[in-house]
Image 1 (cartoon, rainbow, N blue to C red):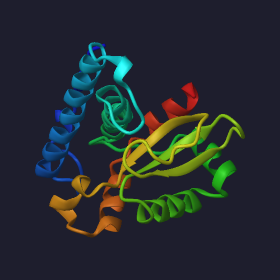
Image 2 (cartoon, one colour):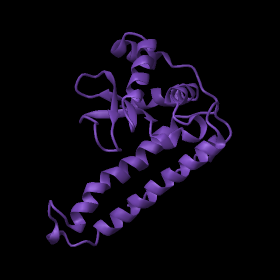
Image 3 (cartoon, one colour):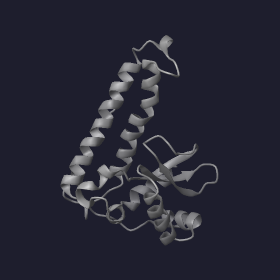
Length: 194
C-alpha cells in the first residue's frame, strides 16, 4: 500500500498562536514519516523472513519500527485534521460525552493539560470500546502507551518539534494555542463514527 501525504498547507498562516514557520516545519516532519512508512513496507515485501530473530535481523528491525512510522503518519494526519483556521463551538453531543467521562469540559481540559505535561510524545483523546467513555492517554514515541480497544477522536502532538519554533520550551502555552485552533466539529464527527 502506498501511503500519501495529505495536504494541510491551508493551515499555513491561518492559525492563532501557531506560526506558518512552525506548521511548515511540522508538515515536513509528517511527510518524512509517510516516506519512511512506504520505505519500510517496500523493504518488508522483499526481505528474507527466514533470518528474523529477536536479537537482530533485517525483518525483525523493520517490524519493530513499522508501528513508529505508521503511527507517526496517521497520528499527524489526525492532528493536522483537527486544526482549523475557523475554530468552532463544541457540539452538544461531544460536550455530553466529555461531561459523562470527566465531569465537566473544564475537567477534561485540565486532564488534557496534565497529560501533555506528562509525556514527550502524544496525548490522545479516545473512545474506549470497553467502557464506552472518553479517555485521555499519553504515548511515548508514537507506538508506546495506547491501550487496546480505542478509537482515537483527537490527537495532540506534544513532541518539541510541534511547538519549539513558536514557544521554545513553554509547552503549556503551545497547548493553549492548540486548543484555540481545535476543530471541535471534526472531533465530534470522529466520536460519532467510533
